[in-house]
Image 1 (cartoon, helix red, strand yellow):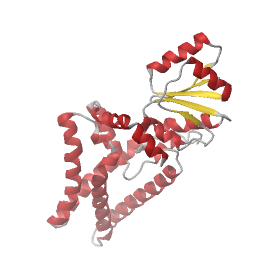
Image 2 (spheres, rainbow, N blue to C red):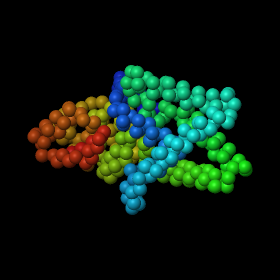
Image 3 (tube, rainbow, N blue to C red):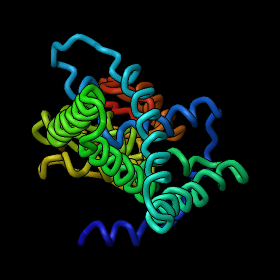
Image 4 (cartoon, one colour):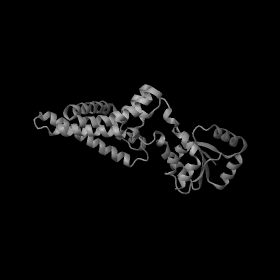
Length: 286
């Protein structure tokens, strides 16, 4: 409930927070992310290196093997569905896929934007693909008249898909974040760990609210937050007397860069960049 009040008080920020959807990607990157999302319907366990860097597991380019395998499997399953089911069955599956494509990818091609690479917008499409692949596997395994090597191949394919799905669920269920929620979310766990290690910390936030909210779920109750007001050098000095550390959480904020320069020039406080990520940076003042 308290966050509802925060949202209402900062509704202008939320109104502009969706501007990112009008961003543009190079066609090569756009297609690469779309293919990555497609493969991740069945398997995405290779992201463990992001969330579990301490695991001493050799790097294996899993995607290099699974991407062509998945594209061929999905394409053939749709073809098989169309050739072996009634019109109303395959038309239902193709409607799930087609409507999603028309409402996401086509607007990107016409007006620009990145709707087509946001996985959560493609739930109907992914559901249609999974139904199509499931139908293919069941029918191929169930055909008694087919050669034994074909049955073994499709059984092996089924085992690979089920095993990959189970491993992916296991890896992602314990991960502190996930690629399909927010790509820069991988920056949140190390920032939260750093802040939580301090006995009495305070965070001064100079980043869009939708970037900051995911971090609050991993902060301990002892953490104090200053939101919606930019302090001056006097405020910073007072905070260092009352808290063990003052943290500046920013997203390339020009005003905070100026504030840090003023603190360096006018005080003897130590300023240290703790984390400098692509989307968020954390600076401590003590």
